[in-house]
Image (cartoon, rainbow, N blue to C red; front, side, top):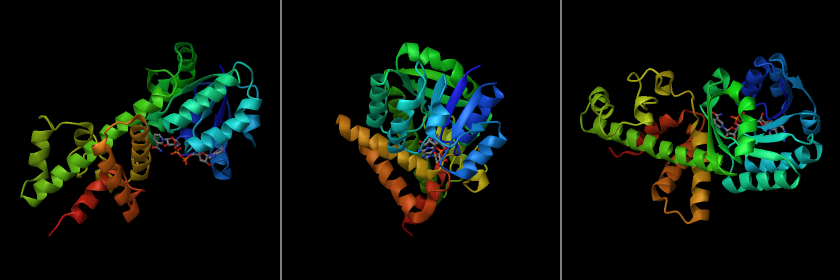
Length: 295
Ligand code: NAD
C-alpha cells in the first residue's frame, strides 16, 4: 500500500481521499480550510498543516484544486519537498497551458507527472466511480493506475502531457452545447403545444438522442437520473459548466479553432450564472431559455 499526499480536500478531494483510505493507502491530506481538514480526518485521512508535510515521504501526490493558478502556486511548495521518485497526479480541471506548464516544472525537478481530470461529479467521487482522463507518458500512466483505481470506474490514457485536460474540455464542450440544444427543443415544443412526453419518447429513440436528454433530461419526471427531479440541485453545477466552457474557449482561441457554438454556449451559461443560476445543476439553463423567450 502506498503513502499518498492529497492537496485540496473539497467537494471532490474529500470523498476521493476517503476512498483511498478505504483501499488501505495512507493518505496525508492538506487543505487551507479547517472544516475540510476536519471532515477528512473523520474519514481516516492523516491531516497535516502544510503542503510540505503532505508530500513528505509520499509515493504519489494528488492535487484537486480550483484552478491552474492554484495548481502552479501549490507546485512552488510541492516540488522542493516531494520525495524523490514520487509521481505527481493533478486531477483538477485546469487550462491546457497550465497543465503543460505543471508537467514541464515537474519534469525539470525530476518527477514523473500526469494530468488526470475527472468526470462523474461529487456522486462519482463518493461512489469511487469517476472517469479519469489521463495525459502523460505511458510509463507514468501505468504507475498511476493502482493509485487511481479506488476512485475510478474508468481510467483512460488520452495521450501526452495535457491531453487529459484537452479531452475533458472537448467532452464538456459537447455536453454544454447539447444541453442547451435539448433545452431549446423542449421550450420550443412547449410553446407550440407539444407535450414533454411526446418529444422525449421520439427524440430518445431518434437522432436527437444524447446524454443531456436521456440521462439528465432538463425537464422533470421523464428520466429517473435527472437532477430536474430534485429541483435542479447539482449534479454538475452551472458554475462549473461555465468554468469548463471558458477553458474550452481559451484553448480554441489559442489553437485557432473556429468554435462558434462553443462561444455561444459559453455566453448563455455566463448569462445564466449572472442571473444567479450558478449553484443549480447545468440542466436548469432551460429556465433561463424560458425566461428569455418572448411572450
Ligand atoms: P472545491 O472548491 O470544493 O475544493 C477545492 C479545495 O482546494 C478547497 O477545499 C480549497 O480550500 C482547497 N485549496 C485551494 N488552494 C489550496 C492550497 N494552496 N492548499 C490546499 N488546499 C487548497 O472544488 P471541487 O468541487 O472539489 O473541485 C475541485 C476540482 O475538480 C476543480 O478543478 C473542479 O473544476 C474539478 N471538478 C469538479 C467537479 C464537481 O462536480 N465538483 C467535477 C469534475 C471536476
